[in-house]
Length: 411
Image 1: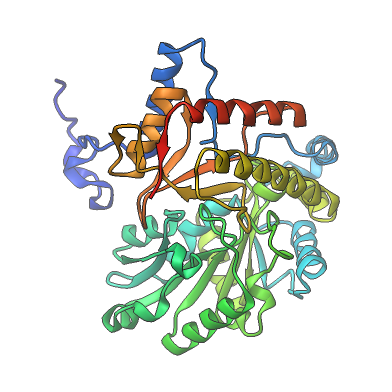
Image 2: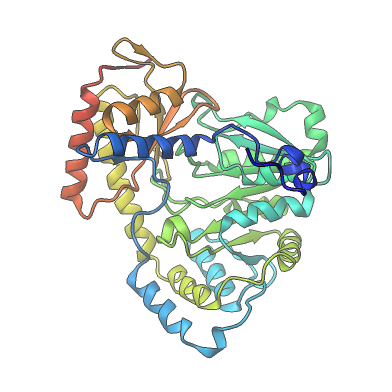
């Protein structure tokens, strides 16, 4: 075995210190990838039914791609964008007013991000000192929590239970945690549960934030993929802008995954702090991408079409899984279906959702993502590749056929 490099003991404690690179723990998504590779090698005759992909399966609308090509060939778009071009900020402000009735100052209350993921890294940098706490819902997107720990803070996990409508129990947080808490990170429509927020819930959050002096960061990545009622922005609720920001993404609702663009919107002082930290982190997204995204934000039929597609696919998936015993229903939003995992298949018992997920891959080449944070659940994504509805129907029929052979049992 190769000796450690001379700098091994120089690695920061936040990534493992002197033990960095020596861990043996494998993240669940890597386990899934390995299981997929193994089953593809062992059963080439059995096509993989991949419900584990968590990204849009289509390219951006041709009008967006054409705009990118035009803008990429303009000399004036060659340079650094720093904290974003006004054209994109103005388009974001127009979008927020048209879609949600929320009026924002594009100069002071909106700033672009190079995808929403970096925003969740930079926002803790604006608030977290050693010993501070970030309140995070689980299951959920972990980036803000990871960076909270990097800055010497702590993460307090708020499990999302079905019995509570997949809302966090804010009243259950201990007093010593509340006294040190600075951030509450939410995500609605929620990934992976599919729950959507109500005005009443957001009002409780706003009251909670005022009462305990906690800043709210609402992740709105899936907001345009809302099926239960109209999409609801946190900023639509009276008082929301006084306590936090909402982070929007161009990825999910506009088929622009990989383009790396979104925006942070809300209280001007928080947006300013984010922009100041960002200014020392990056030099802005390519201006041609921002111009193309501005067109997308001004073209409402694009997200309407994408939402209709994923709604249709989810309805078909729910019907298919119900045929084989899954206790599931149409989610309120996202392109994910979050459903209790089977507890057994014939004589084979599953102690966790992860065990069930690996069984489905091994036995029938059906890929899902397990979640065991707040009960044993499987996440099915409808971002599989299918060129038309006929292909979708054939995929659902094959899913039912394979699952029917397993004698699945549920609690």
